[in-house]
Image (cartoon, rainbow, N blue to C red):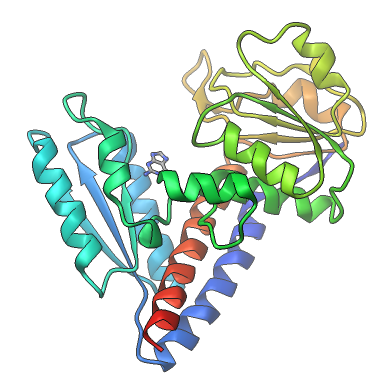
Length: 286
Ligand code: GUN
């Protein structure tokens, strides 16, 4: 029986610590504020944004959701981001992805002021993360995964970590954070040969490929810690991860569930990044 790394308890602890930092800022007259830009009517995005509003309320962070119509132009969205960059009462900016098809996300992301980029998606933050520089806003999902790993393995030095998936948002920054923690990191992707064999040798396996139940017991060793970043629907429409939990769980040391795992930690790290942005702004003013 594996140890189940539950997102709920870890996220609650993380948000409690954020709430304390928010209080300390309030005593100095600063109210941390996260601006979320939501363009269009994507149902999943609406659910995610509602979750972020709830987390903000729990931590004492102000949330300002800017809802823009599906017909919003690239220029209008750019102007909105630029106005938020200038607004000193806003500490964090998040443009909810995906954007409607007629808009390009990259120029929008690149317009967000790096000091307000609580998603950690701008090129400046991406660069700082790969340099292992603590000034960076770490992207929320990889940062949440690291907290989950540390909860069951406080010393990661020398561990063999395998990252499945090379996305800019999860796989690549995940590899950087594991490397900064002195892991020996292997990145695997759709063209990797002997995938199951490489994964079987991992002490830490992070699955972030977006394929329902792709990782089966043939991919894991008995002492492995498995972090499942996937958020998919199975053949019955039920939420599931990239890992086939029922087959893998009895075969490993520790594993995150889906739902109730990485997703909750991702949201908690967004709160942490927002309070960090507000603290930084406070220091700049002092
Ligand atoms: N859409 C789904 N997850 C995320 C996220 O973490 N950040 C942003 N900006 N959009 C998302």
